[in-house]
Image (tube, rainbow, N blue to C red; front, side, top):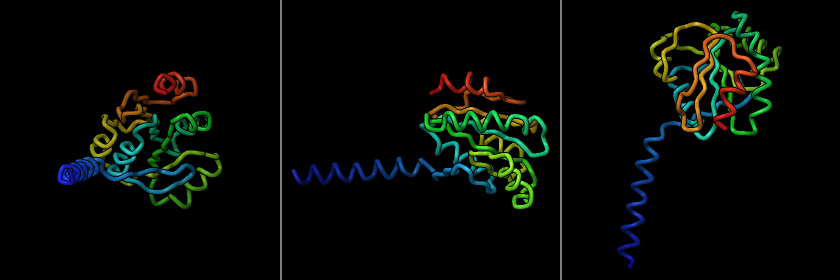
Length: 171
């Protein structure tokens, strides 16, 4: 009996170790934080948000449609954050302007979700990270289901109505 229990425990240890090794790093961007990021961290953040619906929004402070859609994204986040929805904003502004431009811009616009400024400018790396080709057009919103699968890509302005149409069925 002791031998069977020991064998079972050793077997479980190896299964947990193997599964744990495949999971990769856990990356969670806390709401109302602003920092730098790269393609690898974006890929890890998408993986870490499995179990939630993730809206990944690429934008820049100099992009008028990007700025125009911020209130809709903020409102949607506030309405649905308690229902398993996360929004991450990825700014394509110059990373050197994090303190002088981005943080004041985020504060002025009361953006409640996490914002990261992309340091990688390699479109292929970013495309691999987000699981879809990125053209460089802004804004772009990518919507991932609870299993981490990309289910919708919206190039151009996204409205509150569009967010509800694309995300509600995934809840």
